[in-house]
Length: 265
Ligand code: BJW
Ligand code: ZN
Image (cartoon, rainbow, N blue to C red; front, side, top):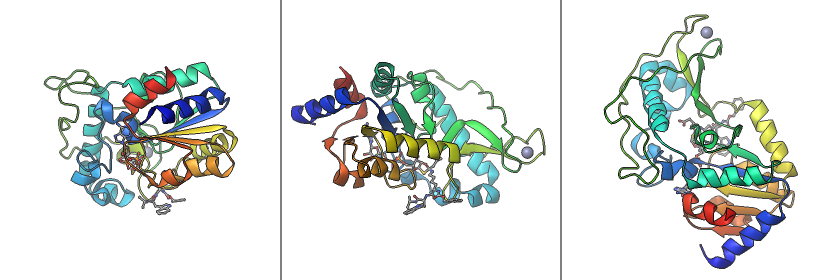
């Protein structure tokens, strides 16, 4: 990231009245939450999404899938929002029209001060019945050794999940079918209210700030394109190039936890 890019992005943000912040897994990387596609820390480097993140995978082996998501949920519970999350909250606090749209299934935006992000891919904290969709309680967490908050700048930010073995999912209190994670798997439709809200916000925004996404997963990846097509400047925060480079007005190559606080200073 260079000074002129930061200055230009700062000017665009200062002039914006209806900004949209669009976030992906890189937003939470500095909190120790693994991304999906990064070379070293990406989940899809270590796990096969076809075996874990599709409806067919859950039908084939509900315990494998439930256990994996429970381990990830516990990992997120131990993580803390990083300075990037707090900077996004500061943008929204200054401009209440700001809409935060996230692909992330963690709860770090909420804990970082954004009360109601638009969630395109669901949440690790909203399990529901796989048959009747009745919401189910979030399981209580057994104490684990050294179970405590993992600071964003802690010594072991990408520590392995405490347990990712098979775990039988609870039964739905209504119909008895297995409870599933409340996330959006490959081949599933995004929640229509969230997708509609995201498209509406992107259509009416005067700045779209995209943070920490590879922009490879659709239809979420189209949200910045909607804003650009309608004339809004697009500012990107990402250490590496993405398909969005082509439509960016300003590209800030760096980690969200450093770039965003500098932007809102
Ligand atoms: C940092 C950083 C730091 C690192 N600071 N940055 C069009 C074309 C091709 C395919 C399709 C298409 N339309 C649909 C599809 C199919 C499919 C798809 O997109 N496939 C492609 C991958 C090829 N899409 C779907 O299946 C979607 N559903 C659908 O289309 O339904 C149609 C339908 C309609 C009606 C009825 C029925 C069906 C659903 C997609 C669901 C995605 N789900 C996941 C898993 C969620 C649950 C879980 O957590 O396990 O969502 S996949 C995963 O990818 C997760 C993420 O939200 C999503 C996006 O990933 P993200 O956030 O971009 O992370 P990464 O890892 O990819 O990138 C991280 C970035 O951060 C990198 O760029 C780093 O450089 C950067 N970074 N450190 C800033 N410190
Ligand atoms: Zn049910």
